[in-house]
Image (cartoon, rainbow, N blue to C red; front, side, top):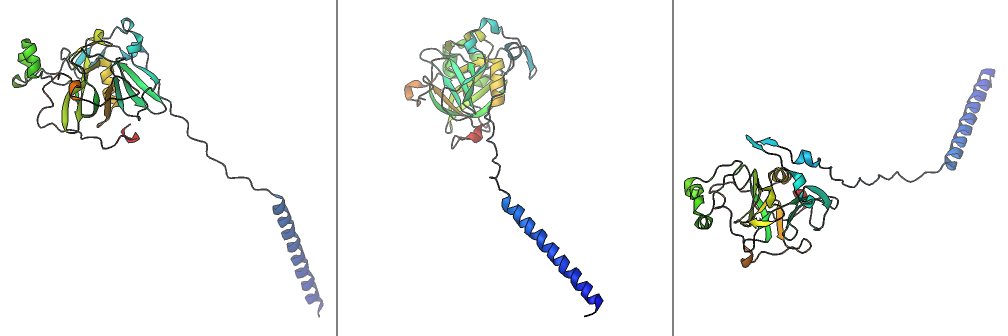
Length: 274
């Protein structure tokens, strides 16, 4: 074997031994290392309702739809009837509206066990209503057409009958700044959630059977409520009632005008309503 061949052999053998030593060291280090568990994603934070503005802001004068709503003297109203976030007492799914006829409160259920509560005025004895319904029509500054039976009781309302075109929306309109029209299936209950300039009636039972809110509150509710919202009107928020024949309200208007595009019934109450 020549000297050149001998040197080449020595170099090749030395390179092989060095590579083998490095490989053994690498295996040893790997054997000493420990592998921890995969990191766990933290649970999403619990839903917290955004705080409401202060009362002076919520009930301030506001221009809306070409009308100037006056400020509401909230200091003169029992604080339980002012808009506020409360623990949900109903157990219903988020997006549901519950009217408590005993407490004169309306609850809009929110996620996280919370609800927005509004004070309401209700129908006087003999004019109240209860049951389950769905919002199938919504109107800003709605026209009011008193039904024939109301005109019979109050003939001075005849100029506003359906035949005479009704009363256009405005500050003196009994339906106020907004109205949510409630249906059972395809049948108009003639029952409404609506605004009212008569803030002194909130917390009392004095109307013809519908649920009235202060105008600033019905505007807030209208903006929060999507189409097809389920509504439960009950005397016990923990045990919703079913409407019966002797629990029908005296209607406040002559019904949704013919040809109106309705929103359709809710097939199932789900969180998607919220």
